[in-house]
Image 1 (spheres, rainbow, N blue to C red):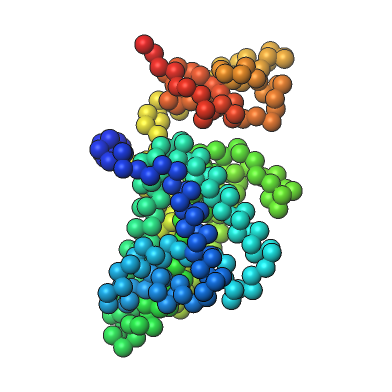
Image 2: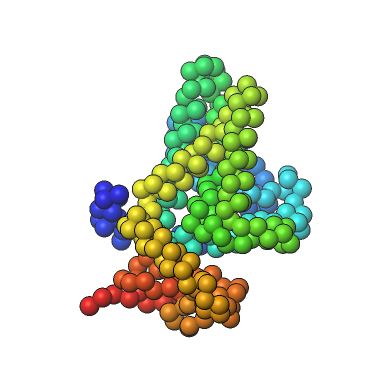
Length: 301
């Protein structure tokens, strides 16, 4: 959208490069806090609205240091490995989205997700405050704060990736090959089922988790609509035209359908590679996955 592009031109210079690097660092520090000083996060750092309204405003930022692994959770080697793998996947996907969207758009996506989490927490706190009275405010604030982390926001990055690169193959449990789009569909179904389960419980204490899911999905929808790459419709028509050409030429046996403009490799001699056209190059230039994000963009003089 044009208004978003105008904002990007004015504010783009303030975007944080390599944002996921800092997200990983914050996650590691938070987990170390959970291992070294269990209870410190809940007491002084979590997104406790009651405490924030009583002067502890730093919690609006420090809740990002959520400890994903704590001593109380029975931490072991498997927990540590799973946490490291989780961070690696999020780091990889986040960096890829930053390369596709650019720094500002990825920054806007991630920080909008955080803002939605904060807003949802405050709104639900005041709803419960009005329903239960001021006497229960401390318990409400503490109870909601203990449920808030960034796991749903980080998973929404994967959902975005799944729709941008639907044919990317992941190995489920390191063995079963499955395309990203199917994992995305499974994730959406699981979210819907989880939301229904929270509603059916009738217990307001579980609704906060539901709102976190909704906030993450809303963040995905917003940026799928307004922060997608410009001129998408034109490129879709160009892609459709290319598919027709490929279909007509596919009958010629032994002729490759894809060829990298940099290294010249095709899907015939390198079937493990993915080939995509660059949206920032002026002209129909196709690149393999090794050169899609490292080539110099072609500009017409």
